[in-house]
Image (cartoon, rainbow, N blue to C red; front, top):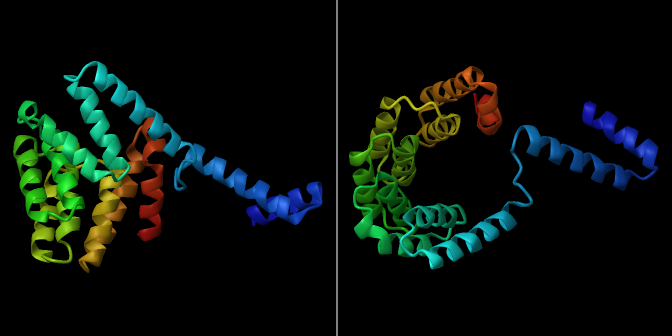
Length: 221
């Protein structure tokens, strides 16, 4: 009703229904970007390209800057350029043997490139170093990978994820989605409810980042 009222108001002011629709859609987009985050950011691709250029320039000046290299890897993974990220990681391996995040990112690349055995091995190594690396995301990635080919293994990874008591709304939403994929409707509903409950308990400054996942979980629940 409120959207319809806005449309009618802008139509009355502008005298053009097409212009009114455009204004309403832009208003909804900016409100979503400001308070929720369900829609993708228009400027994000440009930001990624700028960051990519800056990090590459930084690494060219200092080839031993492993922190910048890991930032570049995360950016490449976000852009789904898994092959490039994997190549960069392999060049860093000698100096990153004891980094859980390194093995987690390498495992994620292998999984995305269709090499589940290698990906699982690297993810397990990351989890051996730090069972809570990336808030338990490796467990979810492995569960996603094996959900269709080995449901028992996927459930095992989900249970291991639950054991670390992650407080990430995004992770719990993804957990619920995985349970649905495996036909575990009650467990999925519980995960979605936990996601919403955790969001309610978050301090205000953290709610903007997690609001998207809490809303999606509420719809699912």
